[in-house]
Length: 312
Ligand code: NAD
Image (cartoon, rainbow, N blue to C red):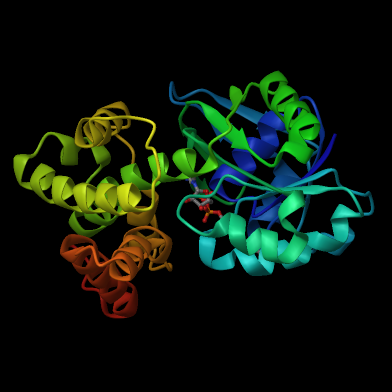
């Protein structure tokens, strides 16, 4: 299988490296420094136990046009605000039959992709793997977990093939019939953790064991669950706040991706997480004051990044 990863940052590099054992991989990323490091020195994947593996000889480029082969699958792994541009650039590589897959967080990525390549050629899912970009060509594989994929029935044979290739590459993957449940199950976790971790600048573990944090998490999560219920979405677990706390405990040392974005003054994904809940709540007449406030704080952090007073 020929797979292009569009947005080969933390997660794209991780998936690209793992899949390179069993597929032809084309890494496309806007960062020249990252692409240059991968090409010249190899892609370094640091594991949780501190050991590292270097993947040499990977194809990496900033311009998708440098991929001369027709691609079977494009995995879109940019941040959500870059999805549209990434998919547009991937489309010409896909020929007549190639599919585009999103494993990004938040609401709406699959819809953006479907608008560009067509619903029948869009597959989506969620992953519990975690990764951090440490520097050009250098990734930390921060956590392992299950990956789920869902698509239309016409895609089923190809979806099965993707799952086979992912499993062969060491990415434990299962097919699911309920995409909304997958996406919202992950969304609720992100609603509870991301904005709060980014505001307080603490690793995930601290949130789950601090009553003052748990209180805010519980309000934000219960608002999101009410919105999901009103939309008729069946979540993949029952005790929502306990699930969020379990994820905090299982990823105790991790810095949430929104925290990483805030720390480097980059745009966050709050628009497709807490803000998306607030917007859906407004549409449905469900009050979401905690998600509105968390969104506003993160948006204010984004807007004031260049004036931040550092620690001393
Ligand atoms: P990242 O910022 O490390 O990587 C994104 C990469 O996309 C960057 O390297 C950037 O240069 C590149 N990029 C931006 N626009 C591009 C374009 N038009 N074409 C090509 N490359 C482009 O982000 P990440 O942490 O890998 O997260 C990617 C997605 O995966 C997000 O939606 C995130 O929520 C989700 N996710 C992340 C994790 C995690 O642990 N990091 C886990 C699960 C899901």
